[in-house]
Length: 369
Image 1 (tube, rainbow, N blue to C red):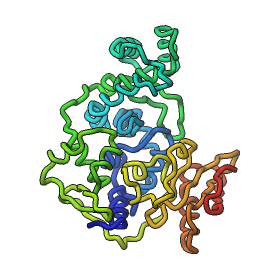
Image 2: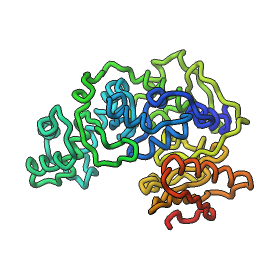
Image 3: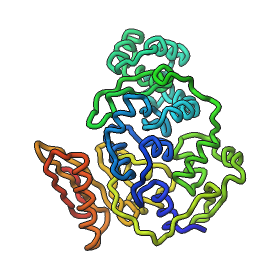
Image 4: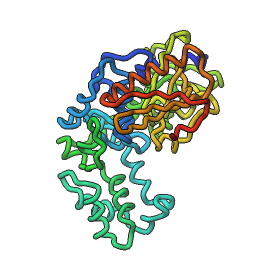
């Protein structure tokens, strides 16, 4: 039986959040099976929190030379991955993405009644071998479907077609609007439908395990977890957690000591470590889990002693960058200066040209100024 604290320290160790790593950016992306990158800043914060002496320009260079890509993968969200992962994970995700637009709940039923195959054919014709802006694709959608919401048609194409976001979006300090490309012409290689789901789950366990089949499904939004686990056979071992649930792990996976110290970490909103388990109590204490809509306002987690213990948000102003923090519990006399130090280090990384100001508010205070 594994205690919650062993699961916490093991997750932090495998996420490289106990100490910063010497891995390169591509190596870290491969290890984590991609970094959550729905918005531009979070992957930079995630990499800064995990890699020693992280240089953000390495991400920009990787996007330009196509050794890194931003693509819709797990949970139907954008991830920063290496090209091999883009080509072999997309075929698993794509069938699930294609189901989304023709459900009644999608954009209030905007696509109901249309033939999915016909819509896809129009999308393939609109987005050929060259990258195209969302605005231009929306204009094509409006011309083809004048009686439908053009934004819904565009979003449908982005679900139906294996696409990725091309630079400059995603580069350091660049939040340009997305420019989309088909995956295969951008990477100059075909998708690989032969990559086994079991291998993907094995890699998930290396970075996030031990974990239950429900955790695996939450992370991937795919079905077939039990079959994948069975196919892995003796490459896995099993444990139980404090609630008696079965957890799977790679057979050679090391468990971290429950007494290991965990440094303060300020993560990016939607960080992998927070969102990749159905049961988040290994990192989010009961009753402090935020609704996902909170992250949409760029509210980000503060980890203290390995667990979520507060949230922060950065407010850049003219010549000043204010990082406001609201604790979710009372902090000890030693914890407060440790958080302040990490917050100043993060501001020095993100807002080097601005005067840094760190403000720690009362417990559960509103982050808004």
